[in-house]
Length: 166
Image (cartoon, rainbow, N blue to C red; front, side, top):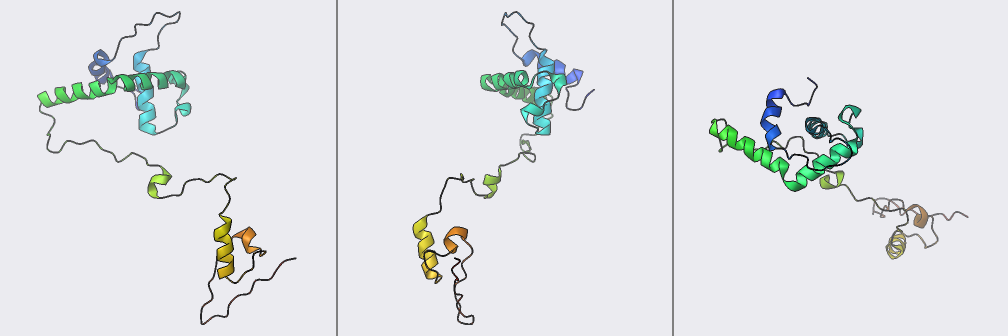
């Protein structure tokens, strides 16, 4: 059995809960178990859809199954049916039952990283001119081009003077 693939016992539980293909096109429908294994492979590995191994078929087809089943509530009905079955067997303690979110990845922006700024976005010139004046630099200074760090003059240190490059 391949990694991330359903066992025969798991497949027997889930198969009746999956929708039947009713479309009558010129080609045969894809094997539902293979599509579900492909979906589980993606969800287990966290890989992009385009990196789905070829043994599952075209990634677009597997993604279409995933998207359609998600929209129609197939995964929700599978989870509900399995929970009911496990509850009847006495395997679920509802006081401690939870979904593990340990492998849920967040974007860099969720951790406080800044948004990307397009290359055509300019720095506000009013702020730059004001900062240059406060630093003792005139408006034609290279400061306006480089936006280097401002070091405000302190009492213990002599003020830095800007040299004009010409």
